[in-house]
Length: 471
Image 1 (cartoon, rainbow, N blue to C red):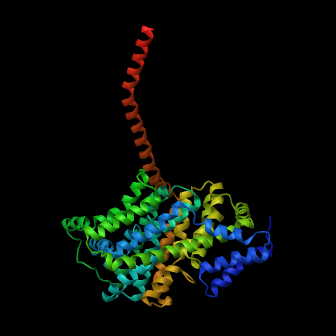
Image 2: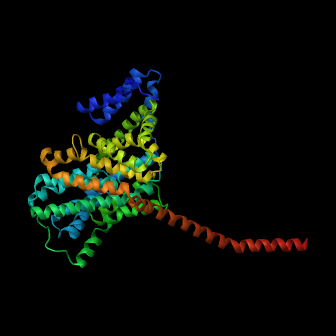
Image 3: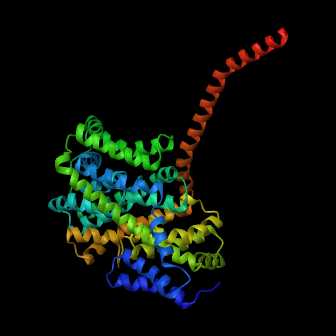
């Protein structure tokens, strides 16, 4: 099983178009269509167009626009502001208080925006100017904003979690439940780095000491509706109250009610059009990348590239831990060049079959992929979070790179811990725990149902015995 040079021309063409400045969506489309139009004439063009249309025909993908819209509503409805106030309340007394707030807010916004780039954009506008006013350098402010946003897609309901669950055909609820542990580990590690840097540079605290518990509880109650949001979605999905797509629709209604009637900051007349525009923009960018990557994946499958890659990797090693280390390198490099969704759509069909062959858990592998790609998004030459943050804050990339490397290093350490020890088992157990609870609940319901039907059975049996005796 070998490849000819002409079979690889589309891959080369994608890089040429991308480095020439064409968006990754059109680069992927260009490479795939070039192959089927000019190299392989056995495939009719309408078959490729059918692939384009069918790639979006998934009920689970409806969750993406709903969760994107819910994140936008949270921003306009004041829920994000309440989350920021709570984050400042519990971390403001630490060294580099506002930088710590930045990290904690990103962790909380994982359940709101669901997108690293959306989180980058929001916090670059919201927090970076305030950090500069309080004495933080622009480069450090931009670096911690971009680095903390790497945890956003890992914490439910991150869009990349939805994309991976659709590609891998696995339980979205289990993927969501397992995403909390690596996301929290990423946030804690970055908070430690912030504390070390803040102590060295004498960055200020946003408050003198930890507030009284009465104030913390009061702020938690005020921010409850935002704090409860991601957990409510997970619990509803795990306990069978709604599917992922229905959960997204519920999230939109929930945010509308909270923003309009509880916090009373949402105005339909003022905010409806901006919310719809943000939702359409965010959804279209994600779905376009998914469609383009799906068509390019069709090309890779057509030339048997997944089988060739699998044979090559299995020829090098059949140890799943060595395989995961190889995946780390490949995915980090992909994250440097491609947007997270596109990298995930291309890498998963190539590497997941090998992972299954070697006995790697599907959900564990997906989280490793997502974390790797997010770390790659912080690095040159084309890291998406790096460019988003530097573009909005107007921070020179050279200064950004000097400040971001400690955060990249700590995220790689977390990645190695998550990929090479028992932490994945703990993460998977979070998903299995609610599954077992749901099974026990169903069994208990069946027992009650059977118990209720026992008297009826006895009555029926007695009536039959009487009939037989009379006969």
